[in-house]
Amino acid sequence: MSAQSVSLYYRDGSSDKVYQCAIEPAGQRFVVNFAYGRRGSTLNTGTKTNVPVDFEAAQKAFTKLVNEKKSKGYTEGEGGTPYQHTEKEVRVTNVLPQLLNPIEEPQVEKLIRDDNWCAQEKFDGKRILLQKEGAAIHGINRKGLVVGVPSLLVIAAKAFKSDFIIDGECIGDVLRVFDVLSCDGEDLRSIAYRQRLAALMNLVASGQQRQILLAHTAWKTSEKDELFTTLREQKKEGIVFKRADAHYVAGRPNSGGTQLKHKFYATVSAVVGAINSKRSIQIQLLGDWGFVSAGNVTIPANHAVPKVNQVVEVRYLYAFPESGCVYQPVFLGVRSDVLPMDCSKKQLKFKTSEDEP
Image (cartoon, rainbow, N blue to C red; front, side, top):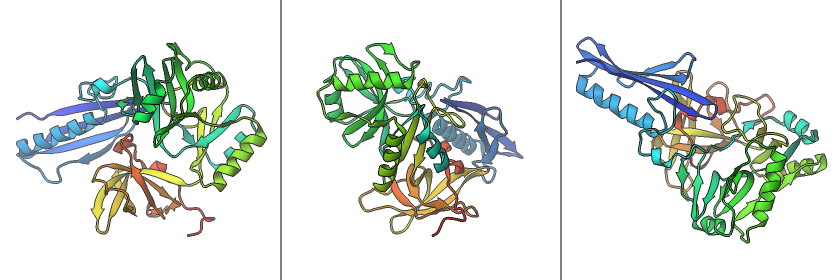
């Protein structure tokens, strides 16, 4: 029997990944090996078969692994079009949000004083692009897939005469909006943020509803300083800075960018590695040689215990450099909009000499 192999690709904003999987002979039996990483870089390697198996078992493991990757957006085409030739293909919109890069407090202080940047609250919700095309109203998640939105948001969107794609954070039945990609068929992504925000203000004002609300924006140094102080005192998630003259660019740059965030506490997206006793789970992060433990977190009574391999969001104080485990973790919920391969150790904020347990 001949061996099998496949190369899968994934592109989403600045992400450009490859995943290779192969059935390879091992004596009279077979193993299923894989390699993954950023396209053009040295790939990490691993195996799905700790010991050689017969061809039927190897083919079963190979097929399962390939299907799992395709369901997460990987495709055999080198263009890396997410979800091509899968059941999710009909949900693909090719509309992706602009994502934020994190910054530390010294940079926050500079941006507060810089008149070229404005500031907004970093909301603790789910990122949603809301699209209205005539009577058709739906949400688009951060992976560019059509998703459902609360019925009250659908009703609110119908209050607008204009068609649009607006960007915001969904918190319960309310959408806090902070950007607009298009309005009445006109693509606004190539104009400056200051102009897009003015267009968004006019759009929101045109609808008589209470579910789609404009995010407050601070422009002057004194306003940004007051907003930063207030958000931190109120224990909000964080603050966002946006460059006033910047275009809307989908995805997340490898570093820097024109939209930045500073969180007042750290959060991490992690994969559930195991279910422990007493409503506790082990969380794992992707390191140089595969997924490794980042500690355990208790699941509150008002949350269902997530399943193994699901992605969850965890708040924490810092991570220990020696073990990579998070300190004082708090379970926030399941993340259906984040891929396991994006749950990297690079997210972690590590303990410094100034941190106190």
